[in-house]
Amino acid sequence: MAVDPAVSGAVFAPERQEQIAQMVADAGRVRVMDLAARFDVSPVTIRKDLLVLEGEARLVRTHGGAIAPRAGSRPEPAFEVRERLQRDEKWRIGAAAAALVEDGDSIVFDASTTALYVARHLKQRTTWHQLTVVTNSIRIALELAGHPGVTVLMLGGRVRAEALSVVGPLGDAVFRLVNVQKAFVGAVGLTLEVGLSDAMEEEAQIKRSMVAAAREVYALVDHTKWGRTASATFCRPDRLTAIITDEDAPAEMVAVLEGMGVAVTRVPGRSDR
Image (cartoon, rainbow, N blue to C red; front, side, top):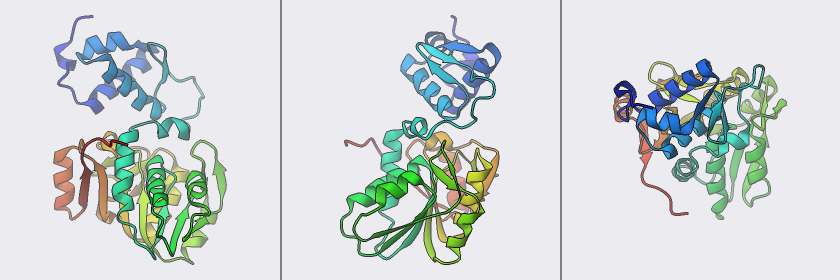
């Protein structure tokens, strides 16, 4: 297939992914090699694009390509699928976020996969005397349960199998009893106009409660979330204390947010773990 100059390698990854998603929606299927030729990038790059789009439930990867999701299939990918996306970035973001937690803090985690990486880094620290963790994530609760010096408070409500989370208004009662210093939340998208957004209103609702309860709010978003908007907004940009991201976050957006008083940490390099 001839290379279209309008969609050559000069296209940024989010733009290329949007075009791929539209091609899948129009044709029902795409092939990796055809996409690599069309966009003048490597097959490895295209496979990464397809992994991102599968994580957003916009397609289903197959051997050699991808197909459109089945009609009526669930709009949100499973936790295990999302956990595989940008693993290295999430590990480094998790390490930077964990470094902000102090002994004696009461913190809150949402059910994002990046928050799980923060919890794993906290677990590696063995000097906790009194750390309180409030969460609606079943995975995070299991990760930290029983760790010396860490008290885990699980929010009540309905269990969502897709996210391994608990949602609903029953969880709000905890925030009337616990003073939360820091909230660590992931997002499907981050824009200057909207702020943080999620694909599911039930998840956004509990995140709004977390944001409202915390003195400081830290967004955990890798570079693939910048410039994207999902259906349910839960945190405006001016409510953020800081954003922890990776070095590929767009410099223009970073500069604007820093001008608004939002600290942005871009964790460098790949991990050697």
